Length: 444
Image (cartoon, rainbow, N blue to C red):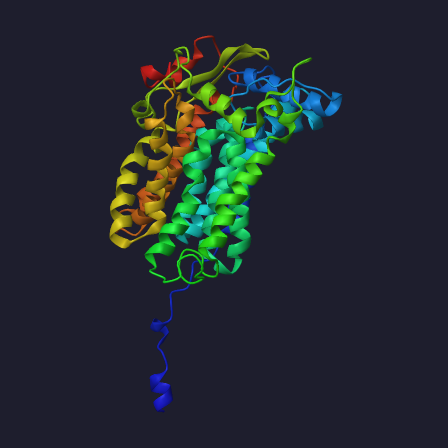
């Protein structure tokens, strides 16, 4: 009898983790893949920055098919252009071949981002709300349908976030997931340098968490957050060394890319020396552009970019890069709420959304690049939408907040459907048909 009375009560056990919504996430990913893949080959001409990256991809493809190729577009790393070249090699030098790999990266980024939020929050409602908000947020949809470097970079960052959050939530898989995190970081860096600010976050997070644990053997202790069983030294290998090795490996084809009678600039200067040229090209003063904008305009969704607006494929068509106005604006107070609630509850999912937003946006506030564009808000928009999804989950627990928690994702779908013709290059009825969607002068 005494033993029975001393046994722990059910309340003493930790609360059960909510059921993993993996099946729902997989289904929504399939829907997103179909939506973004529909009419992927329209427009049938290169548009916006495809005119820069397709020639570079053709040279890489020529290196593997003809044994020689030039090295254009030297201001960016090679991986994204290598993947575009792979798509062209498999499906041909046509619109489908140009865009198939960015589309696959977009689908991967979608799945990985949603899984990252699940592992970070264990919040089923927030995860599914985020899946809806992300699919209808404009940024990911538009960039999954164009042969630009950004989609490959974002896929790498989302993959890293997924695996790192999974390592923290499921330490028994920590070593494997940390290795995958490092590989994903290296791929993100190999696509575009814009990944640098977030690339260092997993390693810094691991170091700070382990240092705050107060272990006497800081470097070799296997105990404590964020991934028990992994030492700080081992984490440095996975999150510091592996990304650099993968990044360096993405440049291998560059050693054979050369002009006739001139050696490869990469082979001539070496990897480190060649990076001085990349930095110089990245930092040079660019000619002012009609679509250039500043970070306050990104935050407030005041300035868009027309990726396309011309008669093509038998109709007037347009692709306007703006954010979903509903969720871009509602996401701002959601970030404030996540900062307050996260600090009060010590909720690392909410604080992580705020920190990720601040880091990814802050880079562009201090970056020595005088001409910037709204597509640089692509990565911050992920964190903003995650904050909005987590806020919706909090609203659901309020007496009168349930309708709002469900209504915001539903309204996001409605706004997405309204703007769909000018983010998916659908036929417009007349040459000035765009005015229907011009809520702000800065979108013109």
